[in-house]
Length: 318
Image (cartoon, rainbow, N blue to C red; front, top):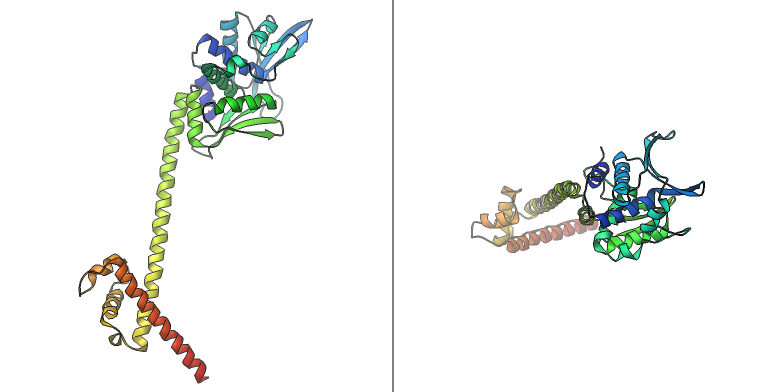
């Protein structure tokens, strides 16, 4: 079972307040339902590929509207050939849709009702239903952080985005070829959303994985930083030793100032140690890191000056 399926299974097992459950049902029907007219009667079909969600819709209709619906199973003939579950309501359809503020008379409302939008608990339940109907969330163990809810209509998608942002989710919308989505990219916001709609176990699993991933990334950054610093130190030490050997070859270390000579000899003897460690090895007494760096820079400059003079003599000689 995928991570998204685990989250949805958890949500279908929640027990919620009657009025809040109706808000959840409104989202499920609005997003996955179709209405037809047969023999002058409205027939509602709510379709899903998730058996647990289909049972949820069936139970919510029965418990909150005292209507009997049918639960049908069809097998898709294309693509993955998954089962399709259809909750079909033949009696009381118009009354149910009217009570859920989806339909009034012969017209359908394109926006979520103010009754839901202005009630925090109902917003949470509506978002739960919207996620069950058209939501997905990536497995945090294997891919980038991403949660989205798909809607066929722009007005409804904007309402979902607005509801999510009532809780500072930083949700955004995007048009897709077959509709619209509201999505989250930030790991913390995804965890907050899962907690908001009642997927506590799913949220805890997500957070566990996120913490481990963030810790692993932090360790990798530290290791990379340490490696970069080590390479930098090795390169600098190699240049220093090269300069000292060149000075010794050209004029001899005994001809340079005492302070520079003692640091040159220690560096030649201990090519791998840090500047701080070098400072502690000077025979005349401990020198600070900045002091050691200053003397080594002087040796590099001296070597560069000697190289310049050598090149000049070569040019003149030719």
